Amino acid sequence: MTEEEKTAPSSDHQGQDVAARILARLGTALESTATADTHSDAGELEREERARLKRVVGLSTELEDISEVEYRQIRLEKVVLVGLWSQGTAEAAEVSLRELAALAETAGSEVLDGIIQRRQTPDPATYLGKGKAKELAEIVKATGADTVIVDSDLAPSQRRGLEDVVKVKVVDRTALILDIFAQHAKSREGKAQVELAQLEYLLPRLRGWGESMSRQAGGRVAGGAGIGSRGPGETKIELDRRRIRNRMAKLRKEIELMEPARATMRANRKRGAVPSVAIAGYTNAGKSSLLNQLTDAQVMVQNALFATLDPTVRKCVTPQGREYTLTDTVGFVRNLPHELVEAFRSSLEEVGLADLILHVVDAAHPDPEGQIQAVRTVFADIEGASEIPEIIVLNKADLAEPEALARLRSQFKNSCVVSAHTGQGIDRLQEMISEQLPRPAVALDVVIPYSRGDLLSRVHETGEPELIEHLPEGTRIKGLVDEHLAQQLRQAAEASV
Ligand SMILES: Nc1nc2c(ncn2[C@@H]2O[C@H](COP(=O)(O)OP(=O)(O)OP(=O)(O)O)[C@@H](O)[C@H]2O)c(=O)[nH]1
Ligand SMILES: [Mg+2]
Image (cartoon, rainbow, N blue to C red):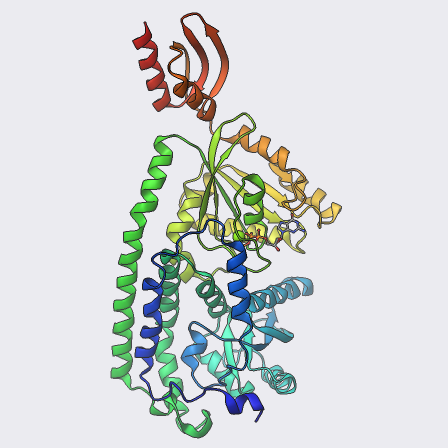
């Protein structure tokens, strides 16, 4: 036994009721941050806070409580990664495992090793084949890892099977991503959404967990102590399930109640006919950096996955002075857990309602095409998103290989090479945005009194003036404006006659 294991706080929770604990921990999500919804410019502070999160060591509670593992606060520390290479090239399998490493590090763990097995389909009992699983157990032992993370989704029985061999916690990719979201959620809505996703993930696994624990009573769990040894019976599981479902219903209602605020915001934007542009793309592509580069916003930028969870909206102007809104959104990832797509639907709808999408791509990534594909798969799932015009923004040009940039540019015609770091290409991007914003619909030619300077500035901000002429009787305006402004202009013109 290592020093750490001896001092691990392993018996704190053991006598408590599992579901009560889960629900108690969750209870904080909705109430804690009612006033903390300011995402203005907390970048520095947020990064510090997150960095602090990662310094916690020595909390390992090996196999003590599996619900912790499947749930939130995974408290991963020293991990070994495993993946299967079942299709595609060896390179692709490696890229995938490297992404898993980035996810694990973002969750606050230290990656000690990673292995890939060449295998058509996962072993139904232990995910890896028997031999490889044993090899993995050796690696775990030799490195002193306390957790194994698997690069796909595991059936509860597979997870148990593999745990039996490697003797430490086994976590799947979805649980890992849920954990990152839980750590990063900041707004009330974001927290509620993540919590809902976690409960959805937990619900079908409750039975497996109970069975696992009854099965191993007096067996695998060290000393036969703890929650596991009591093996909750069927009735107990039913009860837990019902409480979790109740909690989920409550969360859905809460999220629904938060929705009108966003709907009003959107309606206001539509009424003012200010076009909206959404920045979307794979996680860590540089979406927040691009928002900062295009506006004066100081949204937190971090070399971590899913740094941004809450949509941030900023006002922007084209070089011609036309206004539009720019929204930073949550990043996408390959096989985004469907629980999260569901829970974050209202945030993702932000993308579906945009007039134009800036699809940001990390051109320096080994497989940018794969990332673009993954993002488009999510778009297909969001109502309206696939029909919205899209500019492919090839970011990180300062790092990317010229060949990669050339290849991507020829594949994606409506694209633009930029660096959110150096500012390269940003002018060109701004022009493209300006060209591709929807045109205001009404053409008119009016003369308004000089007293209506307010209307003239609206024309500059939201319309496309073709001619502005200062006549003795007033200002002549010829050009395109939206319906609402056209009405106001006509009224002003009539009043002056
Ligand atoms: N070299 C280089 N690095 C960049 C560029 N743009 C962004 N980065 C870096 O890439 C990392 C991710 O940037 P973010 O702007 O946080 O990316 P994001 O797409 O908002 O990420 P999530 O919110 O986590 O999905 C940070 O470390 C940035 O400093 C660029 O043009 N060049
Ligand atoms: Mg971001």
